[in-house]
Length: 481
Image (tube, rainbow, N blue to C red; front, side):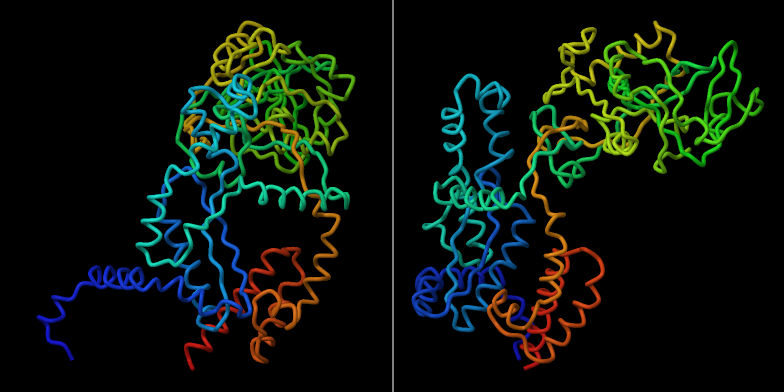
């Protein structure tokens, strides 16, 4: 056993460099490939990083795992080809070019053409290769940087189009309109996980607006922290089982949720009557703004109901702009209302459909819209609230939610088939998936897990649980032996 002075002189860092130097001098990685060449291959799919960024801690953790699995199968005598890859498509590359050119992707394409814009994107793909090679090598990962691949390679793109074509020919591709998070700075929708990665505490205007009922001398009070969506208001949503009160405030009679009356009128309001939300459903009101008054022919400007309405804040009556709210869109469809207006561009400016604010970014238009509400007598109360709001994590600008037409895979139509195939997962199919057959104990564990997970329609999670349970069992077995 070494003494304390010997231990204190030992350096893990020095040892790591010695090992790295040994691997480089002996070309150990290449030798491991040569020795297993011709053996049964183990196919390892590695999701490549974006080509425009530097490696961070997340990459290092994933790289360690991605190194362990191929090493394990190499030691089991399998041939495991490992080529480093670069994800060259999508927003990260485009955003870098937008910053470099000082214009949006749409403007750049208009100026340079599609081919010219693509050339600009291709030019930056190799920007950080040296840094990636250094970092990945330093953590001890064996992978081929010289024979790398890029998702912009023609063979790779054609393989993706081939898959898409198969889905298209099977009738599994459709175009739908969904309300999704939109980065107006980048002019593109974001995935939900991207939209939730950069919340910031901000101050926003909160306005309470009065809508005049058509068949009663009374108003509906709605509340919103996005005044810019009010020109697109097409309905008001109440909770069917929520109690609402008609209260007198000066010369105006106003419907508010009973639990919210105190917030607006204090402890001793003048209550005229009390009704359930269900009694307000179907009531028609006059549009706040005239821009889309013709939508009344498609069922707009009425009261609807849904369980998502709460009385935690606001008035208990929820303003509905179906092009800018996921719940709004869902609720109007559920009530058979076909009206839908979206007077906002992908870069967040009002279109000519709203002439008073055309060309203004929606966030900048808030003040003008509030002034217009005050001028026409619709503004009941104006406040400023501080809340957590999603920002684009690349441009650090506020996101909006907007209806976007996109292409989707019709997974629901094959869900039952996926579940049936999933339920039939056997030792043979696991051998195909994992490259090795489970032993009897492992197969029992997997069968039990399948039964536990068969009820929920969580197909992807199911597969992952099965696979990782198998890997766990096998690793434990190897450790014990």
